[in-house]
Image 1 (cartoon, rainbow, N blue to C red):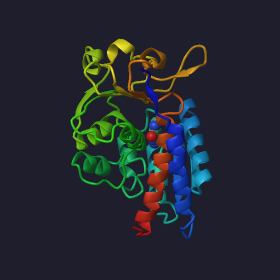
Image 2: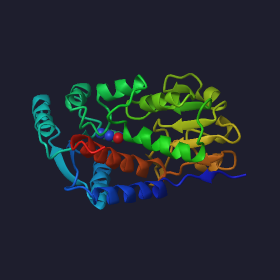
Image 3: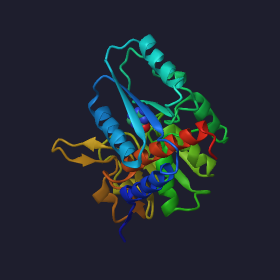
Length: 283
Ligand code: GUN
């Protein structure tokens, strides 16, 4: 048996088509403000992809590319202006930020009603309480969408996440728990991650370690979601799961590239449309 390849690019493309047609009925275009501080190589690529995808569906994006050494007060001031600008529906601050900036303080300053990344504590708190947040983080949201396609009933499933980040691992754990999965979140201090993954129906790898998950780590028929984007010495891109090694044993797997990545962008666009609707009281 070989695994079903979950085509994130295809799913994302149909979500983007639906967004484009929905926006066509709005009196004006939704607007997304993207803030990036400094020149992180990966952030640069992510942000360009977000801007390109926004333009494709008819979302206007304004890009605020700020100096590496911008002060916290200056950055807070820019966010405050965007919070008060009625033309701006969604605001994201690309992470990571330079070390001199307090990431929590910056995220907390974004209006929860414009927080299309879903990182504000009001939104993460609502998610924790199994209450509807205004926004849920795009990567976990995209993963849930892909998972539902290969496993419509998640209730009772044993899910193991590798990586406890604020952007992926933690919100995803909550989303899976809210669907009645049994969830284990493993991380860099976990003594033996494979002890957990061997029993998992679903494994989500989001740790940034190239090809970490091998065939001996998984049980027959496991569903594998790979969030990793790692560049090998030979220049090739690979995920956190050793795709070729697990392919015969898994039930389904997301490829890298073309799996979770395109879904993250599609969900950010969807959140931006939701923000527009929220602010224009369109139900
Ligand atoms: N850095 C890596 N992923 C993300 C994301 O989804 N949003 C933001 N703002 N920064 C990121």
